[in-house]
Image (tube, rainbow, N blue to C red; front, side, top):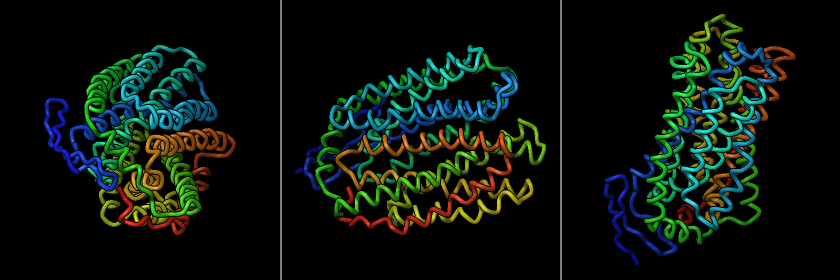
Length: 415
């Protein structure tokens, strides 16, 4: 049975067919809602990207070692990851849409602190506050994107994810323009982004409360995935290992790429930031392409190609000149970034009754692996060199071969 309902969001009216049949999915994409959470994802990750972007400045101002740089990332990534599965599991049973603006409030407080602190311990505290905001935002925002997807889950997840990747790309660029010439106090200007995010998420939260999207999502969650329990567990393990391989290598690039360029090719800090922007922009483009392609040809082929396909490029990168490195990192960003939205949607299809928890687990895993990898790679760089960690991490994309063991979810059971 279908019931016609009108959903209003931010002065835009979208007609959606709300089906309460377990076999059906929402009929139409509510693009303003998906666009809104994607936009705030951009703001959230733009703010997060300030941290690695200003590492050269912090290293100089506070005489930090690479180990301390890695610890800053570790604290941020752990606070951004440990709470995510718990938040997702709780909101699966007890939806709390107003956690969205609350999470951005934590981010705002972390930004204020980061702009005024004067010691390494307080830098760690500011990083932890920003991470806490992320751990609250991601599971619930990912769920909202799925609620408003109209059944186009890869597209919605890709659009949501590309907002974050675009923010990650813009963060270093804005840091180079605003913060690097003016110093630590200018970080306070980024508080405006957090305030805008809070205002938008208040509207999104009201849409979730007033719409019947939660009923639609709950109905879809009653369906199975067509796999045995053993197949489901094995698939989740394979996805976890693929996330591990992907984010160890991506952490190496996103956190130490500027240092690699400065050390190997003697470029300036500002120039290294521009190269980092090119890489992160390529990541954003690859992300937005990966979701719709996964909707059409399936998640498994996208995952297989995106991780394993980057392996030869990664192995070649440490032996290339500056122009070659720039080209290779753009290609690696395009190819590898297409995997994450496909991985998230694949995992959600494996456990459709626990969308929030599974989103929290995989976003949390992404942050946790990145944090631990950053700390370990920082220590290894102190003990050897930046060039050494790039040569070592180049082997991790070969773990993409594990995608061979991912099952094909029957199309009739996809929601």
